[in-house]
Image 1: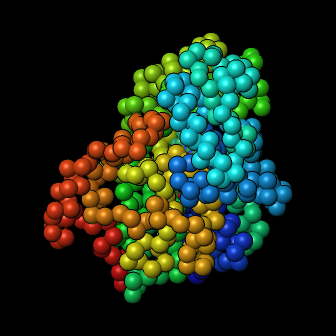
Image 2: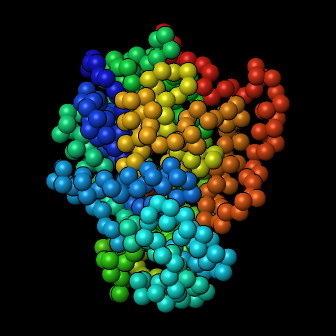
Image 3: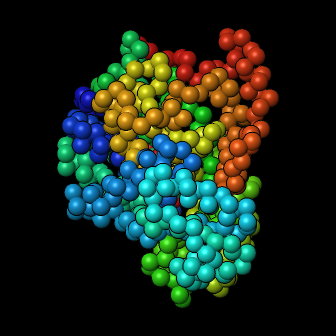
Length: 441
Ligand SMILES: Cc1cc2nc3c(=O)[nH]c(=O)nc-3n(C[C@H](O)[C@H](O)[C@H](O)COP(=O)(O)OP(=O)(O)OC[C@H]3O[C@@H](n4cnc5c(N)ncnc54)[C@H](O)[C@@H]3O)c2cc1C
């Protein structure tokens, strides 16, 4: 396999396929997507598929809105059903403080034109009648949210891209990337060499590995995330909205008459800190019931019918997290033509449509149409290269994910390391994440 492509995308997950689809829509057909396994064989195949649009930043909200705008068009264009179900979403307030937060969010939602309303506890129970009204102060209801089948969505994107000329090669592992004169020029795979001017690192939890092939250090930590699925439960309807109960740290959605129940535990678990095993393709981690039990107890207090439900399985999959909880997007400083789209912090399905669009704009036009400085790969500094710093931050981000944000809040973990790194002269700092060019020819 010796070939030339205008762009090579490393990773056939939802992100890589969306970028390929959007590049093709913008007229770049000479594009190949490579995956060491099959499409979706990273985090994508085991995603819970919830799609919520309202986020804490304008950019991320716009990205997720672009995703939702894509789903129907994609089905019409490709004839392939991405499995989108616009059932709406409920975000519960199980405390007075949370209700205040939801009211603030309703104002924020109006700035985007979302039809989000704060409804009473009674109205929320009407929408999700299996829910107990215990401690319920009210809820935010957004009818345009929903859930999507991650596999169906990814394959529809791939179908759309393929129809426009994009090539997909699965079972091909990228092993090295050559940089010449400060720009990417070649990829070495286990099946030959490809020449190209653009490489997109959409390799999920393997993104740091692929980054290091050109000397770019990406502070991505794989975190184990779990949800269970149940057999059908009497009373569960297909049109149930997705439901998040942040005070109880849990989320729910309907699946084949049963429920998907997941959450963000207070004592999360990183995985693969010393490297992701090379044979970890289309695989899950062993279920960790002990860690999941507090979430399950919380879930049962909100949906008592779960106490008697039959569990099909507890899914435990790794997901790529970043020290500030933001995506990593854009062209890496110092290596022209090397783009990154990774670190989706358990929102990669919801974000994928918009991510594909902004990444394609960035590659084709030189800049994205949204202000993405919060997500820009160029935001990292020396201290981010320190694994313990990144890990401390990621643990905090994950364990407090559902907490109410206060303006005065500060993320403390890693502060000492940050200050130490900042005081040191440049040469003595931990290896700079973007310094070396290991493959420079
Ligand atoms: C349990 C769980 C539940 C989740 N639930 C949700 C949810 O409800 N909503 C939501 O929005 N998000 C959710 N997520 C997150 C979402 O699934 C991910 O953010 C998303 O799938 C990431 O997609 P990706 O394309 O970046 O990475 P991946 O899907 O991991 O794809 C990366 C691909 O790169 C390939 N690759 C890596 N290295 C190489 C190499 N050297 N050569 C060739 N190929 C390579 C891999 O084989 C893989 O297929 C969840 C995640 C988990 C783990």
